[in-house]
Length: 75
Image 1 (cartoon, helix red, strand yellow):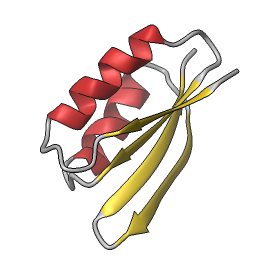
Image 2 (cartoon, rainbow, N blue to C red; image 1 turned 135 degrees about the horizontal axis):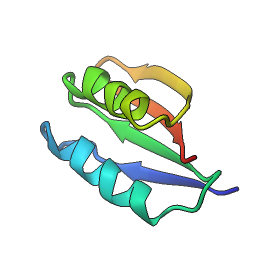
Image 3 (cartoon, one colour; image 1 turned 135 degrees about the vertical axis):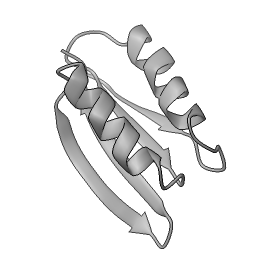
Image 4 (tube, one colour; image 1 turned 180 degrees about the vertical axis):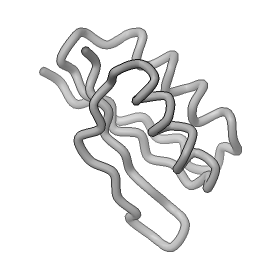
């Protein structure tokens, strides 16, 4: 299992989610994608996308005043 980081800081929604979908498609089952973002709307859209696709969220935290990291596992 690999942990791949996707940096989307500075991108406005929906681009963090679009980039996450593209990167997730490249990963193998069991790999995890760490998405770093600063778009407030993505705090809802990325977890909702993960839930809709049965991707477990293994970590989700605010790491700065307006920045977050979420780790999503591919099944």
